Amino acid sequence: MERRILIVDDDPDVREVVEAALQEVGFETQLAGSGQEALALVKAGDFDAVVTDLRMPGMDGLELCERIVACRPDVPVVLVTGRATLDAAVGAIRAGAYDFVTHPLDVQQFLVAVERAARHRELTAEVKRLREFAAAQPFTGIVGSSEAMRVVLDVVARVAATDSTVLITGETGSGKELIARAVHQRSRRAAGPFVAINCAAMPETLLESELFGHARGAFTDAKLARAGLLLQASGGTLLLDEIGEMPMAVQAKLLRVLQERTVRPVGGDKEIPLDVRIAAATNRDLEVAVEEGRFRQDLFYRIHVVRIEVPSLKARGNDVLELAQQQLQRFASAAGKSVKSISTAAAERLLSYDWPGNVRELQNVIERAVALTRYEELTVDDLPENVRARSDSRIVVAADDPEHLPPMEEVERRYVLRVLDAVHGNKALAARILGFDRKTLYRKIDRFNVEPSDSSQ
Image: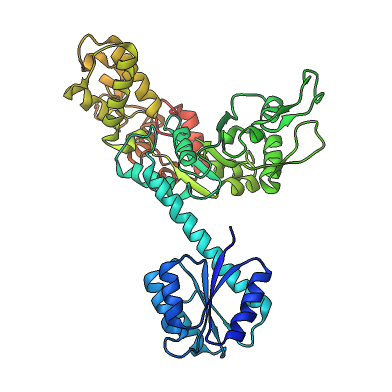
């Protein structure tokens, strides 16, 4: 659609000159000879921008600008003034003008100002549309009203309106893919495909072929050409799950794809334009991986545009019970059982458990409980032993008998666990409290064999 510009000036010759310049570059125009006439047109019609002279009899340009801003703040105003002075600039800004240009008109400068104003209005309208669309859409499958999740969903709602690359971090089983899907569902790409690939689940050569595709004859079994997932996700979103496990050679090729926004299939000789949003997920600390040379720094910066940190289930408080009830209804319906609720005692155990496996572990626990229960209410006896008898990572050295005193390494192990527990698995914070750098903390976690079953990641 052609963009409509309202030209306001009491001099008909100036109006004609301005009109000719704007029509030459494709704008549709309408003319007004006074501020009063222009204001009536703005209230009754729809314009992408208003260009008005400053000095006019009756309602001058500043007053017109102020009144347009008051009644139609979405319509930008470009003021044309005869003086390039500080006072003129301040007056234009105070009146709410989007921009101002001076007489005699530099046509190119003038056209740039009007183009920017019209583009500003388009972008403002698009952002408003996306926000309204996002507000009307539920976060499918996401349950939880904790403050930790409200923060996450607020970021999801804001970043969804853009095409920015998203890095989703969090412990294994915490719901990173669900968050990626929420970003996709709230975006302008929602009608397009959502494609996910686990970068840790296949060898380097197969991963490369899956991502980039291959040409016919590229390797022994390549009898037909095949589009890779980057192209299959065109118009939608591609989730690179466990990106921290991606081989370095594939990282280099992915970096080029993200920089050039084109992809060349394995064995191919043509670059194919790419239209896909990239989301990446990992349970690893990529900054540590960069320091250790296991992940490319330039690729890290490419994918680390907007970061969404998914909280561990343990950090989500009563969300545990909301999720448990959701899963109870799901599994009871699938099993054809009339299980409707969770007993108070069972709920207390669910809340006190650490959930090292996060939401995925909770799903397994509820599925098991629904399968085994003989009642309409889940009880403590329906829960697995590790949930019924929650282990404690607190440091207790209460024995007097030297034979029962733990060795220093065991005390250190318990203390590392205790700090990780207190900070809900935030390793950067845990390292600062313990006085370690993150590499040292990771080495101790590996040595003590406390991840993922004994500690938050």
